[in-house]
Image (cartoon, rainbow, N blue to C red; front, side):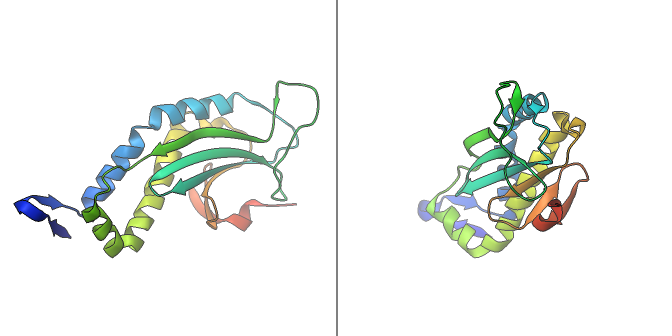
Length: 173
């Protein structure tokens, strides 16, 4: 879709251009994410943790990602002992990054007309970006299951098996 602006200035909004800009915006944060994932790999995880749940909180075109230590029954795990070297709970990986900044009135018109398709593209791009950073950081060396999901979104991505599963499939008792 092409949008004609006033005064003869022509700016092209296409799904392909948006996808390219989105991926470029995410890529700008890759080094920070890889460094932060590497940090989590070194954690001394509490023995009561069954899986790691990386959750993205997306607001507009801003995003934070938090890692939660979970048990198989879908509860966050907290260590209550005195050994400060043991990790449990949650850990912020990235906070309030912006991954797309070209938001003019014309862009919003384009987005409104293509929202469903663009939302799907965003989901796939963010998951692919996170999984690539996870792999570059050595995330596959983590011995417990690890998943990436969006807050309040059912499907999640199994980082060890590189596939989508339902959120319920990651829990066990």
